[in-house]
Structure formats: structure tokens, C-alpha cells
Length: 149
Image 1 (cartoon, rainbow, N blue to C red):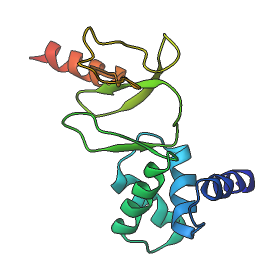
Image 2 (cartoon, rainbow, N blue to C red):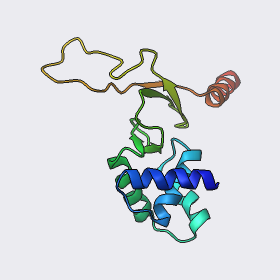
Image 3 (tube, rainbow, N blue to C red):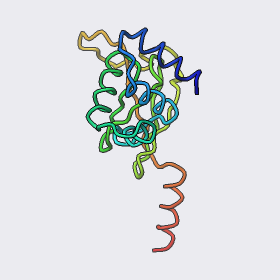
Image 4 (cartoon, rainbow, N blue to C red):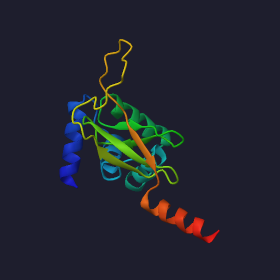
């Protein structure tokens, strides 16, 4: 993926981050595997680089999140997940059973797409929405389990 690596190198440089093998590997792997946990990212990066510590992966994810190259999402009751889709106004669907997470675009366009009834003096710049339910596979499995009882 030469084009992907060039894009990642340019993104790191534009963000003021040094270009390192772990940073390249994390961002390249994550771009093809959105909504994954740090442990999943670490396993994917190890397949590419060999030995890399989990702490290094956490450090890379933290540094990239700080400059908006990576978005960290934290669905309640599930481990934090990471994605490279940043800077737009999208939300997430999360499966209550397996944790599968999918993007869903905001139907109202620019952030914030929702407005609270009372801002309490806050200057609102973002609304985070998580839609909860069962993914098709878990809904199908749950349906079969209920029918067999």
C-alpha cells in the first residue's frame, strides 16, 4: 500500500508528529480496521512489525488522538475503540451483545447536530450520540435462543 503509507506519512508530518515505524503501522492498520480496541490494534501491528509493546501502541494512539488523527470512542461497558475517521460529524451504532460498532452519519450536518434544551452557559461544539441495540448476527442468535427455550 504505497499510497496509504504516503498519506499516513503526510498526515503525521502535518500534525507535527515524528514519522516512526510504530506510528505508521498503527495508522495504516487502523485505517483498514476501524472501531478496534488497543489490544486488537497491537495484535495487528505485531503482525506487521514483529515485536512492539502494548504500551507503545497506547502511546501512539494517545499521541494521534491528541492531534485528531485518531478518534477514541468509549461505549459504556465496552473497551475504548479507535478509528481514523475524524473531523466530521458522525455517530455510532453499538451492539449490546458483541460490541460491534458501526459509523452512522448525522442527519443534521454540522456539529453539534443536537441542541440541549438548556446550555447552562456552555458553548456547545459537539454532541456525541451512541445508538444501542443488537447487530444482525446477535439479534439472529438471540432469536434462536429464545425460540429453543
